Length: 164
Image (cartoon, rainbow, N blue to C red; front, side):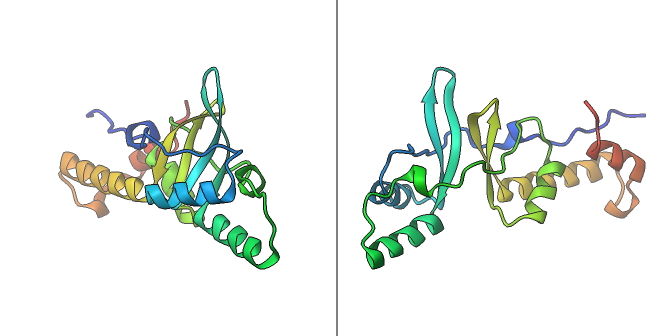
């Protein structure tokens, strides 16, 4: 029996160069940062000896809501720390594309921060997982010289539920 193909992991696919914001940035600075970098959200990090510790996420939607309230109610001095989503859902660098596919199909998230020991390592997107899943599927089919419908279901189940 041939070698079992291993699906790619988050560490294989994640974007490591991530635009981040600081929790003490004000609303105008946060909006300016998102607009300048053309990104829909940014991880909120605090610098520590080991690297950047993830403490939350801030999105365009958050900024839009707070900006409209600030303009309507004249509520100044809003900072990222008060707007951010605390305790965001994160991906582990060891997780494979099947785990991420499950998360992305069960939630509305398009991106997830990748974290290990509270430190931000990168970002993984739904698009990257879809692309990797498609490439993995094509490799499995080519290597097995079979059609998708004739895969060994036991082998496929073992790929998805490997216990480490």
